[in-house]
Length: 282
Image (tube, rainbow, N blue to C red; front, side, top):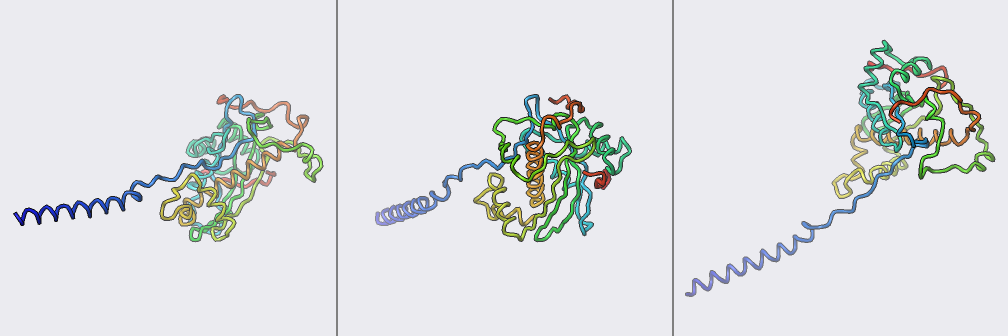
């Protein structure tokens, strides 16, 4: 009898201890995950009432001081960044490379080459450029990009909810009204350098990571600073964002009379002459 009572008391103690442990673990084990956040997005300044515009990216040329850079992999990051722009789609890099080979065009050397490639791809615009800086450790990455328009769709139009530029501020500023580019010539250019050690860049990375990385993970947003592949994703996005901003300013400072009356029609999906070379086999 005494042995039975002792066993029952021991069982009760075990149950009480287990219940206490469960109560202590429950709040953390069942903790509510943080609310989802929408990543920052970029809106193209074009009229997309007839459909999204189609861009292609020529393989970037490696002009950095290192030969270890995978130029095609980073070019793919530029394609991904273009795809994230609302109102624009991008041709896959493999299709662009195949088209360059079919044209027997190992490099995009001249405005004529850029026009010929854009025509063959049937795109609204072609992005060309180079990798100017590449350091994989404590990552540092630089881009120089230019946008070569092909169709009339690139000459303006205000999409819904697009940020507006006050015409009075443009007229009173020192910005000159720019003439439209000639066929094959760049309309907008950007040059960006991102140094992972720079605190301003780190703040940009943290903003970029919002909605793209789990805030409760071990590294959180800092994982973009620990991997050159992830850092290139951030750098490509910011460079394309800067290119879209340059396009917004270009369209705001142009007048209807300056926009070409006859331009190649858009696809059915409805730089200066010293243009950098772009290698399809790089």
